[in-house]
Amino acid sequence: MSKPTVALETLGCKVNQYESSHLLERLHQAGHPLVAFRERADIYLVNSCAVTARAGTQTRQLLHRAQRLNPRALIVVMGCDAQLEPDRFVSEALATHVLGTREKLDLIRWLETPADLQHPLVRVSDARYYDRLAPLPVNRMLGERTRAFLKIQDGCDAFCSYCVVPMTRGCGRSLPAAAVLEEFDRLVRAGYREVVLTGIHLGQWGRDLTPEDQLSRLLTALETGPGPARIRLSSLEPTEWNPALLAALAASERICPHFHVPLQSGDRDLLAAMGRPYAPELYLEIIGELHRIRPQATLGADVMVGFPGETADRFRATTELIERTPVNYLHVFPFSPRPGTAAARRPGRVTGQELKARAKALRELGERKRRQFHQQQLGRWVQVLVENRTADDWSQGTSENYLPVRVRAGTPPALGEIVQVRLESLTPRGFIGRIS
Ligand code: SF4
Image (cartoon, rainbow, N blue to C red; front, top):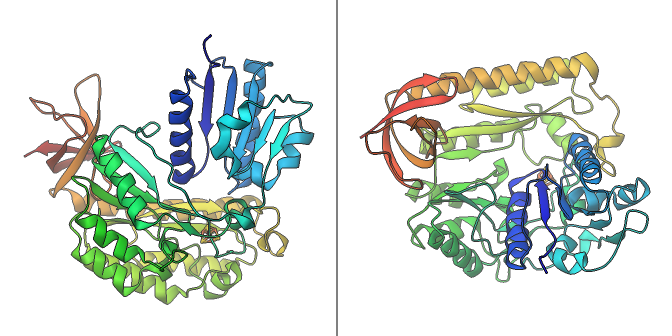
């Protein structure tokens, strides 16, 4: 008898995507045919996110869609939002199975337990007691043929006042170095030429291990480890760019010059109210150092707008600081009060037109800095990882410093190949290049 069909949607961060890739591989191995979420399926899975209220709304929309597509289906909501507010999914009769961030990794087992919308199965354990991080082997990355993500860390101990992550994913836990090298090797053997090291709080990697370890040491081990793949780092906090990590970067031939360093605010008092353990001066220093070590690096920042207490002057401090940095793209997040966080109870929220105007001003600033940086890149030679080919024979890919590049060659490069490209012109869809 054929196994029930499965459809899955993933919201949120790269860590969630990595975990979904692992689950899909296990479902596939168990014989479940996989279908798109817009199709009729026997089982719908939503790997949810709790970082913003908007992500919660998207989760509910997907669950409603699943009910419309097949009222008899098993509908599973799992991950961060299920962990945060399991009772809401039950009282709203939105899912047959509600699984927390740990329980979702045992998905196949829970699917065997009968449940329905009126009598849902709820399995959510207390994230404060999550312990060791086990490897989650992945050979094929969801939606990615040439670039793989590798989760090496989970959870966070920082408790920024606006963030629910420590409540949904527990304290910081790291995959030991030997396991990281093994998973890296698995991805390289599967044909990936770029591996993005991800974690919820990547810079905390190693602190919980016995003996304690450091990200700089791991990067040094990967430098001579399985090849040939380049390494990209996901977001790292300003306080975590310590001298050892900067030295590992300076010595590296594999780490891509693309760094994302969250700023959140350029105002000292607001940073303190957010529970962010640095002053604006430290941010300037670190981003300046990254620019000095890798002058062609793409440098990104997360910025929060409308945090309670963000006066017009404090907002101006943020834009002025960004103007002074070599940061060349921004991710702008309007403040979203999350249940159970200290910031949700703080007075002085910025709302309505003012919030929209500030978010728009920041996005325009980010766009201007991105355009300036792209103009400076014209004429340079870059290494492009070829990711796909269009019907009209353009090969598309991403450079080591994360520029989107298209090339058309007599003999098109193979998918997954890294080619030397000169950046010749710039279009709204990225660079047009010429292969050497
Ligand atoms: S560092 Fe702060 S914002 Fe980032 S996951 Fe941890 S608590 Fe959340």
